[in-house]
Image (cartoon, rainbow, N blue to C red; front, side, top):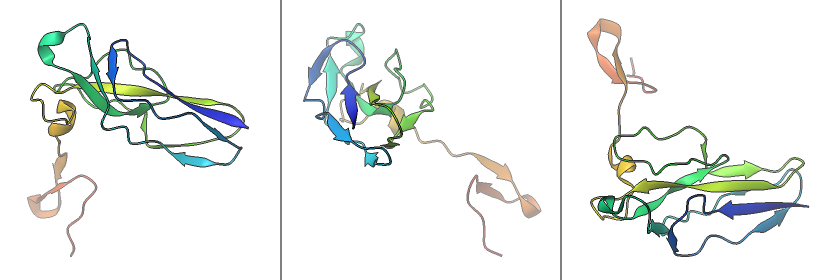
Length: 129
């Protein structure tokens, strides 16, 4: 049996409760708790407001993400147990506009490139012929 542990990751006053640990067996795939209601106050840069939950990572991210950052790779929504315990670490982002949504998620980006006949289509999409 293996344990899934949710870690707060950064120091501060946690508003809300971390999800409970769970026990699983090899081969189990677990969808991670949403935890979108969590926030972190009492952090070093108080002029940016509270940090809000932005996701889970398999490795600690040692900073609070701002709206000008790029969302880090390694953010996971589920884990699969093989032969060891798993710890996931909270990823925090600033919420300067106090809407409850991490500011980094308010800046969607679209990657586009010129295609056939000079048309522009976002990456990953195609225009039917």
